[in-house]
Length: 408
Image (cartoon, rainbow, N blue to C red; front, top):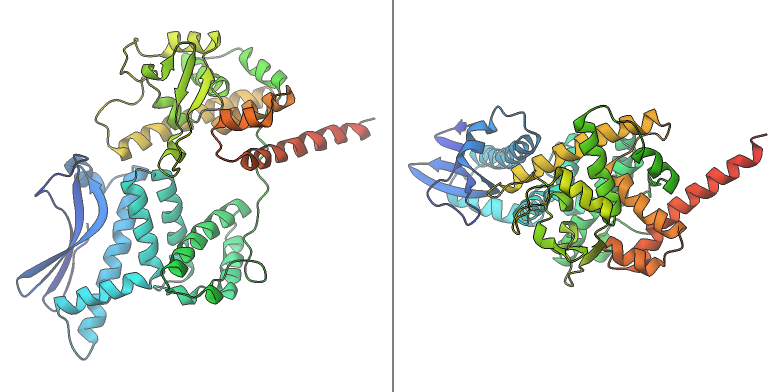
């Protein structure tokens, strides 16, 4: 990692190996040295010695993301050092501490970094990436440390126009704006800005609602996928894991790969969604019927049956959260690649792991299942979420059926 020196002041990034944390990793820290004294600032990132050694030249996406976050924090401290050196009072470690302490409270960048650090500690790495890419985009748009009061409705409209000018989709714009809205909400709750200064809402800036991608398949289409002639063992395994997701209440790949044999109770699979378990006060157990087709897939591709083993042999004990996320993303990417090839060959179009979840829900509804049952099967905490979830797919069906009226 980079080292910065100015007027006898040195800033560097180090892996503090003096004490291992409970997660068996070590904290990364910023170290500032002046007049033989050193102060340390926690970067909010924990790494193994091997990950630290690979950090500066790695091509791994997760480690690159952490390196970029470290660079943001490094540049922030560096800018304060330069400002203090140029100031009339000169540089002291005490003044640097005071600046960093004050700046965190009214700094959009610091607020985002804090949110990313918290999410990573909670092992919510996907959400952490979402906030990280948002602040990275904001910094590309405006290369200065914005205050909460700088984020006005007019600023948001200009930022929105900038994103669209860069070719960002409405989905991406919406995600970035929702992350920024959440951070601004925290600023309002902490009294950094008043309710009148909050820039989101009717008559101010309203976040665009992107129409979701249409991913639900019909029962007949699922059948054609299962009867498709496969070309390799890898393709067969990917197709079978996709089908397992569809049958197992639309389970996502992260939850699928973390399923253990102990989750099988009788003729059911019982599990909690990792996406919501850390956020929901009331933990909602999902129960899926273990169908004969699912048992056949487990027998073909699963681990040898041991109570504490994962059902599918991808994740092993002792992996760090970063390593787990890398494996999950790689498996997801491979399944999406193979399933998209199958979908295009069948004339269905791109198929992903999301398609399995959406198809489970819509096939259930079109078969006459009660929405309350579908909601419970998906693990939704609110039936309105399920109603909204299904609404766009029903619209898709109406549009498709209406198109037949003019096919003379």
